[in-house]
Length: 429
Image (cartoon, rainbow, N blue to C red; front, side, top):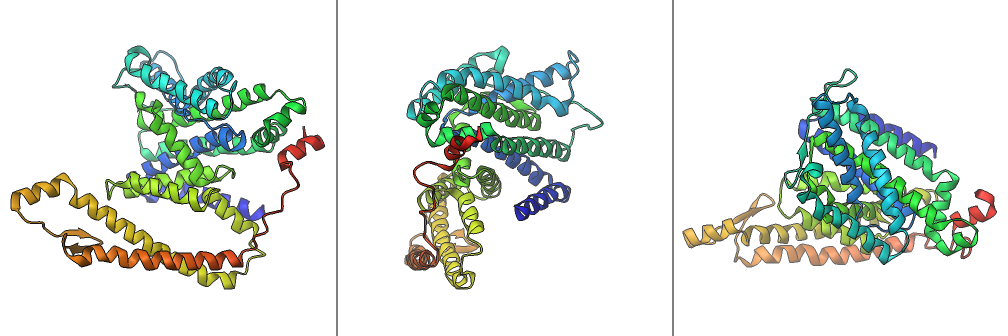
């Protein structure tokens, strides 16, 4: 615990010190990563701790965003005074109310029916927003300017970054504190076995409504910070793409680990910022990462990190060094083969390349990995095979060796009753 606290404080110090040394582009990327981290942490309260998978959480993210935009307009036009630093409170309050109302109906069902109800509610807003000009500004959306507050002009990206960082740290701290409360333990027990919670005398439906509303509230804060950063919002914030993205961040990071979704959101957000400037196929790479994580690390990046931390004293690190190095090398070979094929197809099948062929009558060489490749040369398509086949073979050998070195004693749970429920039964309420 002491090492975890030191690591968190070191990361926080880095987040405070480093941004002034970076350019505006990276500062904006960090703002988006922080907002995505808060949104994923709020979403994980519902799915990872409450066991309720929502496919429409963008609704509460968007409600928070539009609430703040309306408030920013009122402040800009001089109708009411309101500090810019406190704007997320308004988004949180409205999202909390909307979450409580929607949660009352959605939590009447569970499993796939719950997911479909949440999806329907978000789609309802997504369909309604473009036609409700007064509330959502139609298809163009609404915009407003950040006004000076408490000595800050909020005219620079750096000031917005520190505002975002402050709110994200406070909210994630509150979410973590929530997990340590008796109600937080009840939320985990609800995920483990809802029927047992009812049998123990708790109001399962009421508990789910509260969890849903709190998750929506923190999602509203994330939406508010997005509106403050962009100074605009339109109906696209309600889209299924936004809802799907938070699901992606949460599960890639690890829904069963508190900090997992935060890690997943930061990693994928920064990955998108870097890769989207290089290739149009960045969404394909994002999808490949998601599939690979779900297949080979179902507990996500956070689960892998946590497993290594928990087993750090038991693992034979000296004997693991070689297989880990081999797995890294093999992974790079497979990744290079995949990137080569994707980038080659992206170039060769593009309209620009087809137009060039039609104009010149020749299939010109294209550039990947800083080298020119001929389209019809056999080595061009043999190259990824020479990387992929040995890479997969070495990867398989490395994982087999790693698996034998790990102590695979997974039978360390205490019977059939999950830990959170056990705690409640022992008087943790």
